Length: 152
Ligand code: DQA
Image (cartoon, rainbow, N blue to C red; front, side):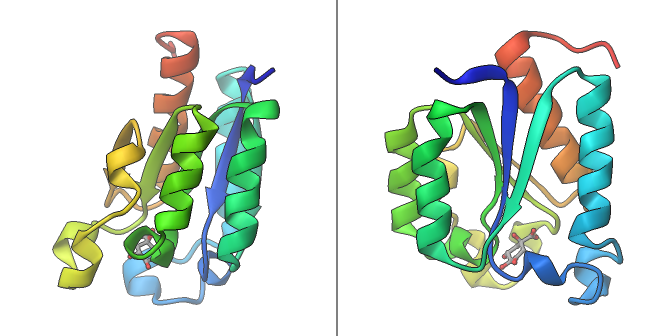
């Protein structure tokens, strides 16, 4: 049974390079440092988070498929797979737990190919363009959806 107070944070390809990858677009924090901010907010909101990253589409699909056994919701930055992965979209539908799509950059202000998301149509909603805050807003959205309004 999905634990309502446990949220899976998934990161797609190249997000392991955060900190040194195009810092003018993605900022200077590493995924590890972003993880610390996410964990600190999760503690304040009294929820558990598990943060994973993969460069492999199949591994991400496996994690999405397995998520309902352990998690109440998924916050996902699908990275480049946003714009290509029917497999991840199908996995989210099959998982049947709420997924919130997030992006560090505003995908609608960038190249045309980034303006289409295969994930958006099956996500509860999308948060895009708030830098690291996108992760924290995504976590808040997931927690509010699962547990009601939060006060911090
Ligand atoms: C991204 C935006 C994607 O277009 C890109 O491929 C990424 C990161 C973001 O967080 O802004 O890798 O998902």
